[in-house]
Image (cartoon, rainbow, N blue to C red; front, side, top):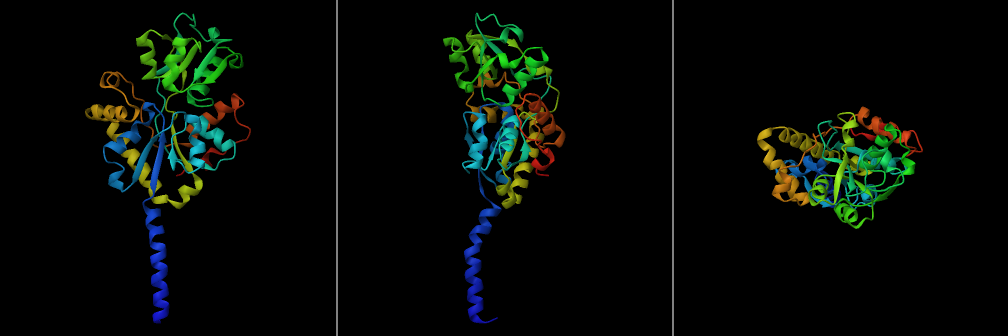
Length: 312
């Protein structure tokens, strides 16, 4: 090899080395909302699951779940946790997003979210919601879609209910002020509302949902996933480790402490929280359930091939 060619190769190696290092260990900004469904991510951050895999993960709070796909598209986030319905609507709208992992799954034992009516509103059933203004923490998100499905199953036309998008922390204040008749909320906000007397639980409607379907999914741009396969694999492995950690009763206090740190909950609230089962792996069947449910509600314009959306 000539000295000139050797010098050229050294220069090329020096120029490309930072890019290789960046791809092997990219900075991941992860977007989450104020719900316990992100517990496996919180645990991975607090119990060293990310660090053991040399992942640099920054957790970033997002007020409304419905804006996570746009944040992914703009590269403000590398991975984020939309609800399945928000994710599918984004894909239906043309965003090239895929799923790298899952968050939590449904369970009929969970009563940590439901319909919370304003004190004195008289709302007791699905029929009582007709003509009412009901706040949801994201139009097209998990609670909105599942609540509309419950209304339909109860014989109520959900188009006769006026839905408004309201972030979780505002639910109590809007009920007290009379701006909404009810909210579809979740703990810890639901418990705070009922404890304060501003509202009451009219229905734990969530118990009608089938078991073991994703409530939160972890999405990323397809382009980013293709460029960072090792980081994607490590991220998923960290969540699998977290899921195992969460399922051991001896770790309950640590799991709750991790949740409390990221969604700012005091110990007296944390101790009463129900925590949904972790579901770090997403299946075609789970995503197909949400696709079918959204089709019933005329929320999707295209036929989505769900198998193409899950990173295996």
